Length: 204
Length: 204
DNA sequence: GCTTGAATTGAACGGATGTTCAGATAGGCT
DNA sequence: AGCCTATCTGAACATCCGTTCAATTCAAGC
Image (tube, rainbow over all chains, first blue to last red; front, top):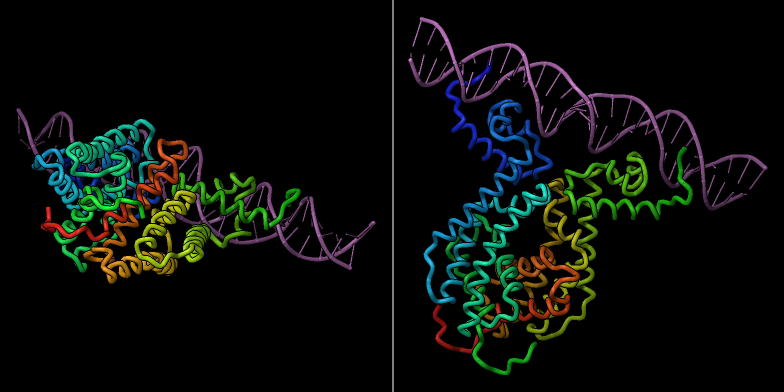
């Protein structure tokens, strides 16, 4: 027995990636065996090697695909001209995009160490590209004196950490709706970087 | 041959935990074998079972120990009366504490899924206890109208995510000193939650 | 209807895994 | 000096791992 009825590489390929994504996110790359992925797809382990040269490349393709999507989705997003509105748009986009891809986000933060150095470097570059998009907004707002940011790089990383953190606790059927969460976070991000009306500005 | 010269359980025990902590953080719980931990200690794999009933318990003890330290360290921290200063103290404490224990922090966020449900629940409880400490500060500030926070629970989680994020990029020999990083983050946290002088308060 | 090639099986490979345990040894106690 | 026990070794257990490959089967093109 071989070749199942109705089997095509255009069908099995995506199913392999979907199964791997789910299992890697749930149990971790190292803890998931090729046989488990195969079982999830409904296939023997050997068949996976029609779709990936090895386990490591399977992981990399998932992470790379996620970053490709992220960068192109942000590129396709309408961009306001005002830095304040740009920041608002970024915060909302980031939350929305990441909440819809929790498995991929989780893996992207946790399984980087399982990549070869070259593959890691490629992803790092893409990640930095995304961070630069936010930093550019902060810099623009600083130039036009709307924002008051001591260090744009540090602030970029701090804001992204805060926004991405939403993926660790948000529940679809929870207390707060997605749009409400978006709103609150976007507000908080704005307050954190916006210049405050002049006052006694001594530190706390 | 057995019993090495100068061997004591008070020495080997901590070394086992230290080796496990380092290796789990570097390669992940599932990817590290008992034989690797043993080799790091300079001992055979079987000897590890004098110090832990099994691998899973070894992980739990590390995570539990970390949370114990965290809660008692925060408990020992001098607590100001003013919510604004309390928040500042919390932010600085959190950054300082977490930056000095990056391995444990990393594991605490990544390896929770490798715990049994009971062990997971015990840690969750401790984590919530820590979060409640921050939320209490936010609530106090809200009552005294110093802070303007829409949802204290959400804000708590957002701030902790932001502060913990520092562990992913901070380098000892980097551009910014620890105290400078502390300062910037504490400032940002303050701005994010402090009530702004009344203005047209329309959202962006 | 036959042929060809893509898709898959199932067995096999060497090696690694967590854990157990009888036996060996060194250090402290008497 | 001699014993005792805490400490550790080294081998063994069954089971799993990622990966390869000849053999097999199905679907499509002629």
